[in-house]
Image (cartoon, rainbow, N blue to C red; front, side, top):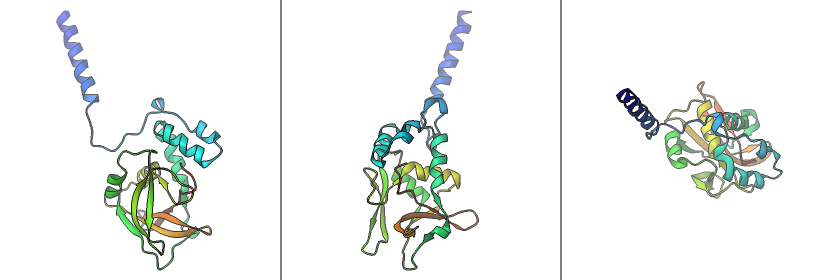
Length: 189
């Protein structure tokens, strides 16, 4: 009897060890029981308060709640005007994932622009800004999941006019070859 119990303990221990092994897979979606909602975030009044909350709590928000909110920021192509002189900065999904790493809201995606507002570099910036275009990392992850990005999917960062405001937008081609646009610079989420 002791041998059977001992054998069961060893089997359970081995199973437990397998669960703790590192993986090279993308970050897993959090289970609803392990995370929080955006109820407290939604009560905040200013974008700065919201950005501060996301830095402290954003990694605990349930992906099942966060990702649908992120993908609401798709912009209709008819609302976007890209100048013919614009020179988009292109980056593969693979290279972009390397840039963002495991960041959640500790940093945001920012851009360096040349004298005529073409994006010359995509980089990580320390925080959300209301004065220059910055995008949250979870925005990209949610869009990547929604559109099933492959490592070779190209993201283009281009300065465009969206509803009479000049800003850097993200664009990529969907499965049908049509450009899809995202603009998320107005909110820290």
